[in-house]
Image (tube, rainbow, N blue to C red; front, side):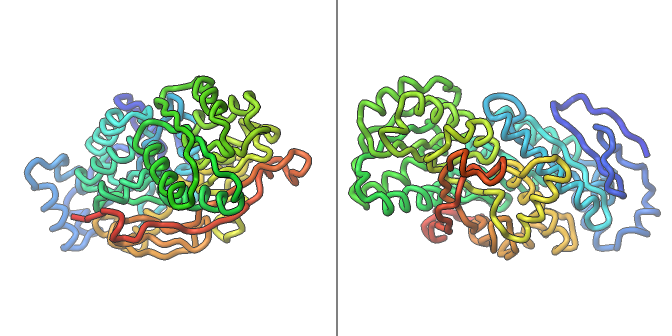
Amino acid sequence: MQFVTVRSLPQIDVFLSAAGQQMTCCALAPHERLLSSLETQLNRRELLKLAAAASLPGSLFSARDVFAQSTGAIQLACPVPMSGPFAANGKFADLGMKLIVEQYGKVLGRPLAYTTLDTEGKPATAIRRVQEIAQQKGARFFAGGILSSEALAMGKEAEKAGGIFITTAGADEITGKDCNNATFRWSVPTFGAIEQTVRPLIESMPKAKRWYTITPQYVFGDGLLTAAKNIFKEKGIEHVGNSYHSLTEKEFSGYLTNAAAAKPDVLLILNFGSQSSDTLRQAVSFGMKKNCTILMAWASGLEQFETLGADLCDGVYFGAQYWHAVASPLNLDLVKRTQDRFKQNPNYSLAGSYICTKLMLDAMVKAGSADPKAVIAAMEGMKYDGLTGPEEIRKGDHQVLKNYYLLKGKAKSKMKNPDDYADIVSAGKSFLPLDKTECKMA
């Protein structure tokens, strides 16, 4: 078996042998195989399909490449930010794919290989990375996209490449007006995140009538803000102000000065990752935790609590896609595997990448094929016991129907273990009806 080092892509390649053992960072060179030997491994129908694919006008692959794809390693890709302000999320997403690939080792008798692609959190870079790995390695299975802007771009590119893209990004458009046959989403979109955080908090705090929002100015932030405004209007809440900021912003004191001057009952933080951590940290330093309630609608998970610390998080409300303390069978298994492999509990970025990749692999097994069209058909309507309990992939828009959590940070003195940063206040499923999503599959 030969291995070559690939230097043309800014990526990390991992190949698993048939025994499931991780080998060096490298790419598997396609084996030279004669057609006669292939005929002993593939039935006539498969050969005809492969021959037809190789002969298509503008095909990226030669006949040998197509045959190698059908018998060699199944190529997966994890396109996430590995540099820039969201690199921490990308790092843990990489670990999630690594864990599930090591766990499965082989699918349909074929080894699994994955490549981590640094999107830098930029749509143009993300598109280029997807194009490169699709052309150079024939990758057709993509799980990633931390930011909604890059996820929307990669979903369209995956469809062009005849592949599958599954993401944890939040913009409603991903499974809404910009949906396509190739794109799936595990995370609850912005509509559901606000429904499961803002609404229950308003209902539990009827006297908190004045809300101020801090929002990243791109599709994800706009989605959260629109959903929040709709609830404000319904519930008679006074929206006393909003501060927009860019995706590169690190200094939030000016926005928080405006927020404090508005004297809100609730500060609603609508940004994500390191930006939401910086916003919360600076808000607490301004004394806002003493003067109002703080809600971070979309927390990035356990690593965020670890970075902020219990004292900062105490009394703050957080919305969460995932929490390691959920007692579902699959989550208990993931927690054990993550502790055994990485000596830590899983966080949202790791868990999201793990389940997204698992869904594609399980669909391959269900379909009995690694052909993307067959895998898509197997994923549509799939019901399974997920990390948050019973989960289902809605066929009409490829949205996973799952729980979203409202957490409340607890005092350090009340933590039962080093990762017991918060209690689950409530959980539930909130999704737009299919006919309201604007999703129209081609």
